[in-house]
Length: 54
Image (cartoon, rainbow, N blue to C red; front, top):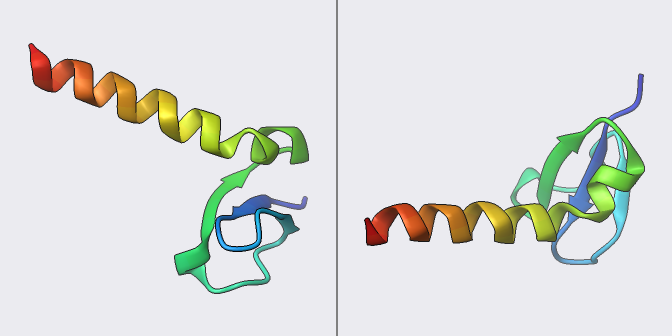
């Protein structure tokens, strides 16, 4: 089964990690999940920032 990765340098979705790992976010089970990778990162960062404020 394929894994999908978001490339932060090219802003493209890669199937089965073709680029250097330092440029990739993932793996994701579907292409759609990978397409929303940056949104998920932002949500997690916001949640961690809120915890730091407590």
